[in-house]
Image (tube, rainbow, N blue to C red; front, top):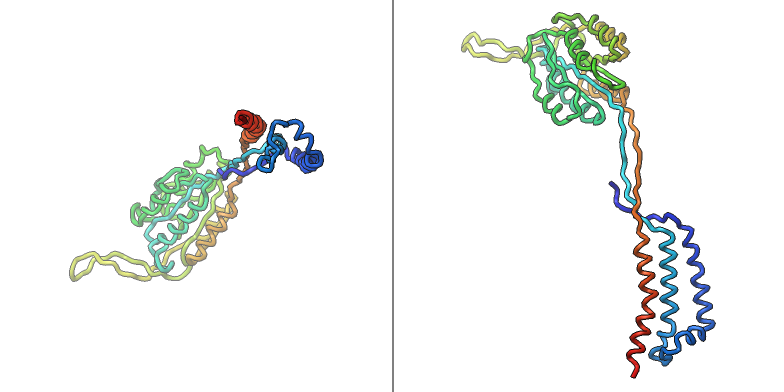
Length: 333
């Protein structure tokens, strides 16, 4: 709520203040009127101010009454925001190939997690959920507005927590099942993967048909290089010590951009490809702009009347000459 600010409901009454100089002029041009009215007041040099005191008290009271008629108010304002949120289900690939280190200074998964986290925090009016998938798909969070919880869950996502493989069809079907009961006007899935479909009991074509039938748009994001080998950490056993060690070896990762493009086109979404972290950030900024949350901001102002204080002050000024006269009379011998 914004701090209070002054406001006049009837400011035209202030024009009446222009009469005050006229009244002052008339009073001092005909001082005998005041002298006759309060003839008991001493008119000596030391008490001449009492002659004009009643007039100026009445004048000040009149000014205060005019101010009260202008109805001074103290206004407090606040804004109400109405949103028609978008329900978003993120589907993040955690297969072994996401450990590829072509997204310096980290691997594909860690960079994707950071970019997705920024995307989540930048959409306070939407419900966002998270699914991770490899050879199977699991829901980490249904669509929620709890950003702190969702980013914590996202931060805990690790590689090799599911059977290896890339079950794109399963990921789409799981995400669609989380959105099918949604009453949001816009429902989308953002699928982030670096491979082609090679696992799962549901093929991507059937899953995308389900999304199309439910009115769910799918944005597909392919991360990583689309040709050539990439360096990837591989765990192996040292033949001399028998210990498990990690080696970095070049590995060819098979990708299927045509499949991801078909999924996006069929559901009314878009296909993106990111070869580096900067491109991935730009892609999520583009998705953020394409799927903006409708928002209506309404400013509300509430006023509190403040004229009563002026009215009471005017009454006190009208009574002041009476009190002065009273004490002046009682003080006489």
